[in-house]
Length: 310
Image: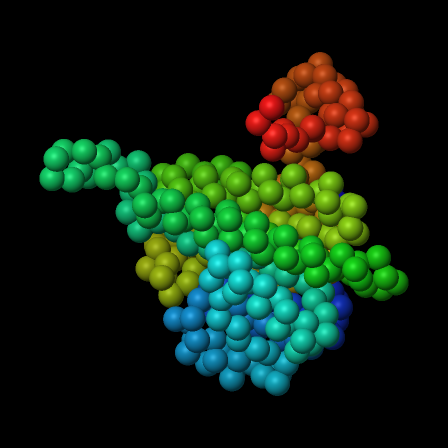
């Protein structure tokens, strides 16, 4: 893919969704629900994985699908390893295999992470427990999802016509991040780092791991803000916009690419980053890094520290 803005107007990729089995974490609402609908509408088996409290919403969503018989809700906490094992095992038992996993589940802090005014009765600063939970869900939960997806896909990934894909949902906050929600921004930067660092394993196992970086997207929670955007002449994303971009990335995206979704605009971010490196860093530094990485790769990568205390 080039760094040029891409046209997403050709819907022919949708025919490639038919017959696939897809897990969507955080699939009961917002972007996740819209993504699940795209896959189900075009003939895929869809597993909606979300917290137990979303059961009613998930079941209502499935009932509204064109093919509800090809959809299943599995309650799961993506931080609970046993529940995640159950999610993947049950999907395979129900549908036979897993073709695509969309790691979409994520949350944002409800209080200011860098608040240094909130103290206890003794005047000591309160711990940022809300921020820690954001990091746990968005980073650890995504890592759990990624590892289990790769584990279940690797035995089949190199079979003829077996395209296995994992889509990591980051955010434009993972590239720019000037909004002040520090835990969320940090976690989405981590997802971009996970996308980049997963490519050695992706190549090893023949799995396409791609990213999606949505800008502001209107949901029930953000509806009022969306109205302000439109009043100022800006076009926010809809969940359906992002869902379509995720579906396209799952079947067409080259491993390691990340698509920005911003209103009417689509941009492949990782290739663009590579192209501007000489202007950003200078060609001499780029050459230095490339030579260094070549040596590291040629020697089998970084030597991991030993668990031994000696």
